[in-house]
Length: 273
Figure (cartoon, rainbow, N blue to C red):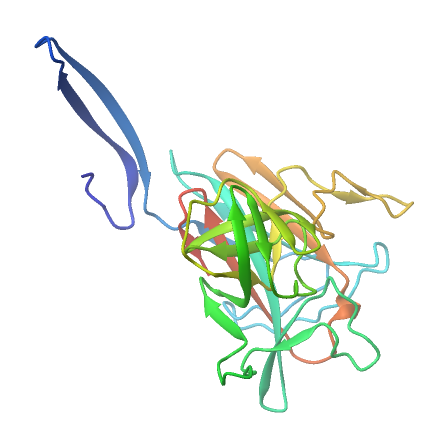
């Protein structure tokens, strides 16, 4: 087995030798790239003069839509080194404390007249006395029962949560997948789900930044280069640095102090929060 080297990346090599029934021998050399180093992730200081609470720098900033675009834009950098695996995605979500409770907010949904339609209590219990939302991999997930899994197709037996959409994330069998399509109770994911005995799937309440082509909103309201996740976003690569932006309608976040959380993933599955 290859040695697992913590917090490092690089290459390892090995040779396989074989002998067939006629005693003929052969060999094959392999070179394996490994990456166990988390990406370097940060927010940029200049956020178009519309600011946000940054816990890392202990700053409180105001979330406010730009009068020009009608959206609030967040931007930052994702960096790796040398032959690290590279950018995969950034998951972003918003939380707000009200009356001693913590809510996670989905700004892609209308908040409603009372401001509570698109918020979810992270400590709410279900009928079995268990938390409805599960904290894992730096995010909050909702569990839903699965009726069948066939390759990239997953059919669920429960109701599809309102926050589940194309471009979102789900987890089944311990692996995270990007959602490619939602059609009723049928979910199509990127890649193939191995056979599993798991009878549940978990859906993340998060916005995902992963489009390697910059999206823009035209005057007509059409999103150019849209990747179907309903959020204007984009990632621009310059060597091993990835500059990213994401825009949301801040009017869908009810007033008060809001924490913004990020989980940055590279292609090797390493993550930074």
